Length: 333
Ligand code: KG4
Ligand code: ZN
Image (cartoon, rainbow, N blue to C red; front, top):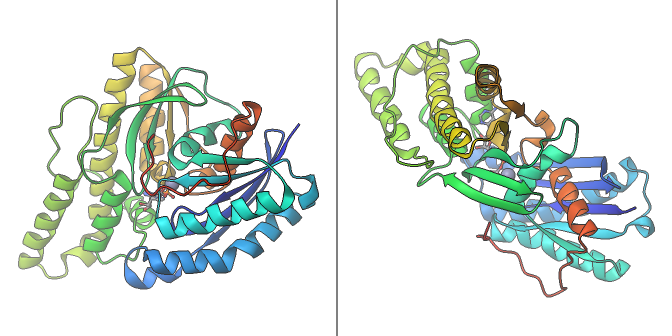
């Protein structure tokens, strides 16, 4: 039996969750809206807002889970990768809290946690499975052989898929983060209206920087002819961009599953909330007889529930961290 409190603060969400013996009983997320004014996350502002949010978010999580802090068995936290100042708030709080309550500390890799989010609810994937983790900072195809036995078998050589969405949104004058907005407009557009260059990358790796440039030049050329092109064609542009990104993502996922002879396939990370990706993956699964695992929306983007479930499995292994642990903006997978 274990009651674990987990803290996530790697980017611009302050989140605290509680896991009671493998079951999530609280998952509080405070979003930072201040960055919308700047077209991207401003690290210095992010850490300041984490400092304001951390105590009320912890208190709310304890209330939601109906847990007294004296009943906690361990404190889990995101050690990295992420923004150093943001991580520092969560790591420092976790360390002080654990010290004050005399509890073990559990450090969690944010990218492992995105994958382990699949163990929050049923159905859970069976080992080994392949997970495509697509977020704002990462795009990785991971072979998952056990809870903490994971190997990256493909990854992006430049931009992440989430960045491709967000940078395209910026070109289209949509506010940050643009991924969800592109998704919304794409639902009303024709995915085959426009075609963009496809990357020619070997193995199971990805590249998205060429696509971004191809979109930028396409829009620039169209606007020379019609200055209102973006406003008039927004839905078709969004649908076509989304279709391109999803096609690129799934082509390599298909290749990976074939290469490793695996039909248990999952997606994770913020971009796994994308409706185009979810629909296309379900269709591919039917065609290839895969069992697919798609997280609930609340567990796609950054949240502490995934840190808590990772903490639960580390607690079982008694994999505890020392008090001198420091955050890592880049963390080995
Ligand atoms: O996992 P996440 O919350 O944070 C990181 O660890 O990076 O992912 C954030 C990314 C952003 O790039 C955001 O635009 C993208 O996920 N995203 C989406 C959607 N929802 C979030 N991209 C496309 N469609 C969505 N519905
Ligand atoms: Zn993330």
